[in-house]
Length: 346
Ligand SMILES: [Zn+2]
Image 1 (cartoon, rainbow, N blue to C red):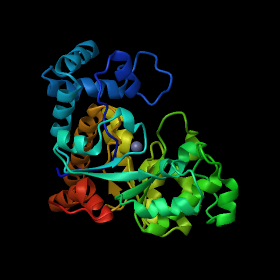
Image 2: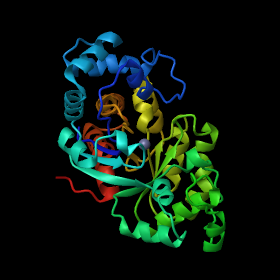
Image 3: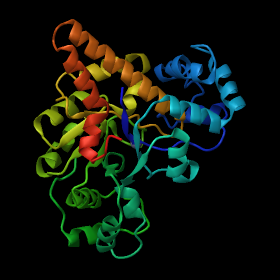
């Protein structure tokens, strides 16, 4: 199945000991040394172990020892190439110094890579006159999409009104992490003015966010005002809310992102729930892989498998025809991302 990973991050360059690996295998900021005792840990042992020449379900200690033996460069090469991805859209706005740069990622994975630029990171690089310099910086960039982490910095329950420049200038404090809702709204409106799609982190993530304020449903007033495409990322456990928003607003898209990886054996459940209401042309694939190449491979494997199982069951129940199932799989796997971001199929 043709798959475009429309939201992911690069992978770490260094070899990882058990603690460092486990830190990347959880969204918790309080690692307890038991990250493998979870659906994602089981999924790594089930699906990634054979790519490293180990039997399915190899114990975590053997998996990590084999990883060290092969070295990070070879592990990354194997897992990325086994993912069979047609294209990667990579968010470069977080921890870039630890990760492969985009040409390295593209060469290692043997797949084309395009950049998604994080609005908050771009704004935090501005040292002079705000908002004028931010607008100029935005105009200089050529990303395939923008990304907002307003959910981490304030919440998605933003006043939808476009702030004027005097409000923005009054709220701006140079050199500080952006958490002010006036600035966050300004970034979203400025991104919308470019016409490019805006990816918005929703739902599942690390405890830097307050979960209930990352529900995409609380972003509805903003979605109601804005006209450019907005892509709600991850969304779990609010993927049904996201499906509703994608149903009612022509410019709203969504994915189940990182949730598919973390749900492991239950990936099919979350995808099936997302597909209860979502129009076929509104759901996309992403892994939200960060740091570990395992997430690229797991995301692609679990998603392909879940989508096939769901569509097969629809065909078996005569809810849709086999040709319709093939067309829907093409749309969700790659076609929707290509249409939305203007990617070519070759
Ligand atoms: Zn991400």
